[in-house]
Length: 315
Ligand SMILES: [Mg+2]
Image (cartoon, rainbow, N blue to C red; front, side, top):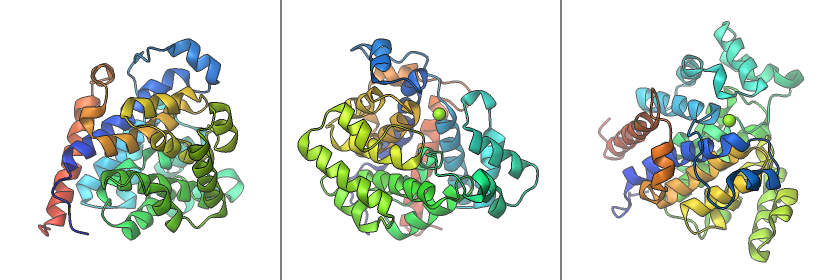
């Protein structure tokens, strides 16, 4: 695919990574709340409260760092980045915690994630929540994107539904970079192979067509911590909105796994609308210490730079 020169790739890369961090930080204070409780915290104002991001962003940073350093995917290095960045205070789920401990203690990458949940592996949304850099870096090549999404997910999530959910989220980010919103659902349906996600995408279309209530969206698509109850919900939040803010606010307003669904909706919307569409007040409030806002922005720029050089055949 030739690169459309009208696309401002850097603005979209920055939009996706900063948008994801902003969605994460906005959703974090209400994680696990139901719809009414979220409303009682945010009211109609939706002001960023703490601006502190969680494990979603910390792991997204690791994915971006590894893709940049290796000019592409390197599983062992990506796992190492996860371990180096790991901060227990960022609220990691029990599955990821255990896998990272196993890898740290010398277990092979191939084995570590497969041992979770009695050998079935995790189908949580922990791979999907961090996948945005893969969607950006492989935005022009769906086959590679799908393959790398699976491989990078497998570090912690070996269940098919966990990996397929992450690949779906990665492709949504890629399509957003390409500016394909109208035919996003169609394109997603073309590549999805699992019955679970085919069925979810079918429901998603019906809900968009009927202009469903939030209660219906929650019961049909979900707002939970498993990949198939959160990735379609994030995509829905993007597709039903026509700007960055509405998309992220809607995703979080549903309650449940608000930081992750907010992060995923923020990544897709940021990739589509670009950095300038993210409310300034939210960005300013986003933490900017070590590996904070400025660092994330720089990662997006470096990732974009390497992608552009690869497209120009410079490596
Ligand atoms: Mg989190």
